Length: 95
Image (cartoon, rainbow, N blue to C red; front, side):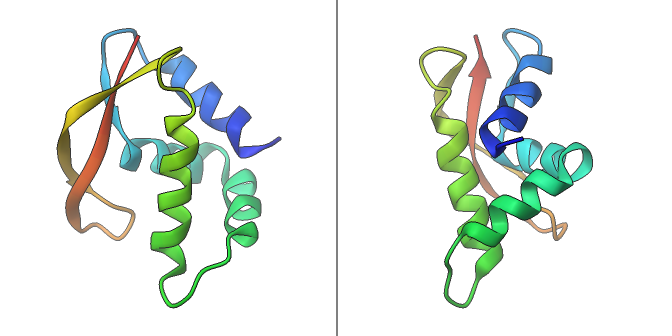
């Protein structure tokens, strides 16, 4: 299954009106779609920080659902990344 299909399934499970950030989607990918995550990650060319590059690309994949399923919000969240570190993150509201 392509990463876009996995992201679609994650978005479909979010109730309308709820806000999600890319950290949420990434954690869901790791928990429920780890094979798709790993396959996608292996396809990303990156320099020194592969995780940051992969997660940036996942953010771009999530953004493909803007206008139809998601509304990008002007503000950012402050949430934990996969390393348990707090950081800024792009947010979307499910339509």
